[in-house]
Image 1 (cartoon, rainbow, N blue to C red):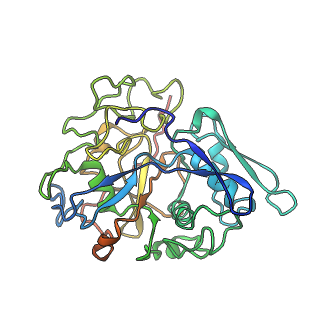
Image 2 (cartoon, rainbow, N blue to C red):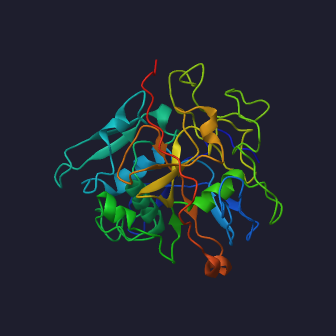
Amino acid sequence: MRCTQGLIGLAMVLLAAGAVRAAITIDTVRVGNPGNMADTRYATPGYGAVGYTYNIGKYEVTAGQYTEFLNAVAKIDTYRLYNTLMAMSDLGCGIRRSGGGTVGNPYTYSVVTAFTNRPVNYVSWGDAARFANWLHNGQPTGAQGLATTEDGAYYVNGAWTTAPLMAVSRKVDWKWAIPTEDEWYKAAYYKGGGANAGYWDYPTSSNTAPGRDMADASGNNANYYGTPYPIDSGKYTTVAGEFQNSDSPCGTFDQGGNVWERNEAIINVYRCLRGGSYDNSDGYLRAAIRAHGDPTSEDYIDGFRVCEVPEPASMALLALGGVGLLLRRRVAPRTDRP
């Protein structure tokens, strides 16, 4: 079934103590064909080989989902999970903060309705790891600590600067995580249907560069730099799943364009990103392109999606993504924006 706008909703759940708070639902798709061959067209040994079945976010993590995360753990924002630039009405993602960030006057967060289902941006790799930990721990409410954001899929424990965040790795008992590069790549480009099915060049199930048609009647469209700019009535990002006929073979959306997406791989001394953004040309959406950035950096074109634990029988085969061989410098922000 194709997605429709608004499927990324917020579900209300009752806590054991009787209090009510909003909990997020991460829609995922299953990525099968375990033991598939790697894509060696652009590097050796290549990318995309995964020895287990796993689930990955159908969409990028949205501003609405991240807002719920902030309200749960950032009443006192110890590790700066919020960036004030998120509140911008053009390049931000519409998340606003009020309050003083103290016990007596805690921070509260809200998101502008038009941005609720658009991807969150201005998030670092460390922010993404803490979000994954929060999911791993069952979406608890409380201060940023080992039971909420600092342990879980990753033992972050206060890591804030580049070197400590580069040393963080996924634990074997993970439930939710930032994708490995191979997990991300397979979900985006692998054709599926067998162990040697091959790969598309674009994550819209095509070897032809996508268009920018918001109606997406024929498929193979994405949000990248072109005319008009920005693409959606003055908004640079598009709603998650906007291009409803342009999914990857496994059913993910927006792995090309919208925002760069973080993964676990290390390139030199930085963390890898994939997929290009609304501020890059269509060429950056290709399987051949990798980018990288400091794990502490927070940029207007950066976001992420998460993946979910594979089936229990596959856990013994879990292999974390490593360092790739095709190195691409991070794309600098455009300076010629209208």
